[in-house]
Amino acid sequence: MTTWITLDADDSWASRQDKAQRWNTLPQPCYVLAGPGLYAEEAFLLISDTPWTLPLLQDTLKRLYDPADVAEDFDEPRYTQWLAHWTDTLSCATPR
Image (cartoon, rainbow, N blue to C red; front, side):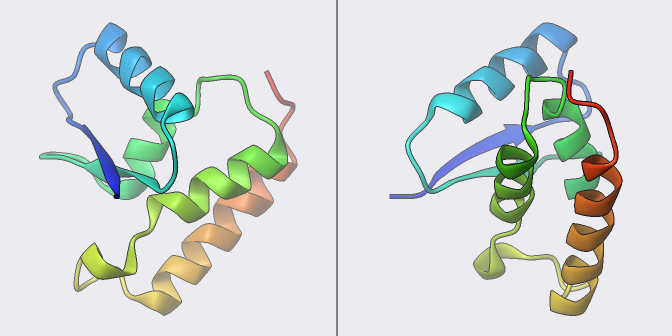
């Protein structure tokens, strides 16, 4: 069974933190769905304030993408570039 958590642009900070906490404790597979007003990149940024390590972060990025429900303009090559960009960017960052 696949679990979805939807992040919306109008979610309060507390709501985002609650969803991030639930997302990190739910059994897999679990995907974050960017709701109205958000793209997947923004949805990831909203949950990325939780403590992380690079392997967890890479897993997080991979789980944001569900091939069965991908937007037409977010195809495999674009996803691959996006994943590489965030993995590279965040591997240079200092974990909080």
